[in-house]
Structures are given as C-alpha cells and as structure tokens.
Length: 254
Picture: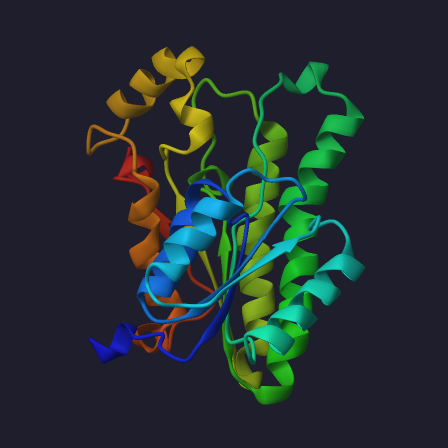
C-alpha cells in the first residue's frame, strides 16, 4: 500500500547492528528507504545489517559513533545527508539493559544507563531534528519499553525503568515542540523480545517466565517491531505524534 511506502526516503537507525535496531533498519529498506546504520564502534553486526538492506535494492551507509558524543552524532548525520540524501526518517534504538538491586547499584552504573538510554537518545534526536526542521518534514521514532510504563515483576532495574520512562516523556515533549514545524515524534514500547541478550542459554529460565506471564504466551520476535516502525515512519501515521505505541503481546493489560 502506498500509505506505508518509504520509497525515496532517507533513514537513520541507531543501534542498527543487532536486535530490534537491525530488524527495523532492514525493514525500512524493504519499505523502500535508503538506510544509514549507526552503532557503537566495533559492533559485530554491521555486515548483516548492510547485507539485509542491500538485498532489498537499497543503499546502506555504516556509521560508527557513541550516542553520548554530540559531535560524533552531528558528523554522522551530516554524512547521511551528504551520501544518502536529505534525512526524513529516524529510528533511535540504541540502548543498554542490565539489572542490579537499587541498594547495591553504583552511581557509575546508574549514570551510564541514563547517559546512553536517555541523554544519548536526546542528543541523537537533536542532531536528527536539526537537519529535518529547516525543511519542515520528518519522522522520529524512539524505542522505549513497556518498562517505562510498568515495573517488571522480579527484575531489579530501577535505572533501566527510569531511563525508558524518560524516553516516553521526552518523546511527548519533543513532539509538542516540533509539531507545528513538520516533525512527528513517536515511541515504540516493546514487551519481552527475543533479542540476542534474551537468547543466551543462561537466561533460559527467565525467558520461560517471560513467556508464561505474557498473555499471548510467547515473547516477540524482533521482526514484530518492524511493522510498528514502518507505520509510525510513513504517511499512514501522518496525524500521529507524541504517541507511545506499546507492542507487548498484551502484557500491560495484566
């Protein structure tokens, strides 16, 4: 359907070397966009991301940058514009997750989580918007988490939950600042998803609990975040901004 067609668009996806970011980067290419893949230096999955994008006949640009480095992000976005064309679609999926009891958590662990998941996302959206705003057109989609709306039973992740709650409210704040200037800003909040972290053998029992406590009886495949990302990035969502789209198999209903 033409409503979901991204032909001629230039996109950037952060966290694009693995997991949800990689799946979305390839999915945007399948929908017609040329895609820049940004992830931290030395990431292993760039080749797979590039191959997936190019198999759909789209151009791919690989960018290495730390989302905590505003200067590196500005340079990366400038390269996107120079090599792929005017930036019109952005999906910000870069982030980390870990768990520690709040009373034992070091200040460094807290700050690192917030610096990457929240401040890094703000700096990324800022760099992207600075390119989009003068043209009065663009879509930014931030990957949050259902953990930004609920507290997951049995998971000791006050820092992660806080960072993702911040992403949701930051999304709404940016959406309201930029709504009249042609930029839509939305979020996707995945539920439990089969990312590489959750496929490790040592978390098999935890994965079983995740499946049992999700109404649909399973975890999401990373590719199940592609449709929501294409929707929010396309003309199909032309009147949608400031929205947090929860994609969780019904988890938050319980």
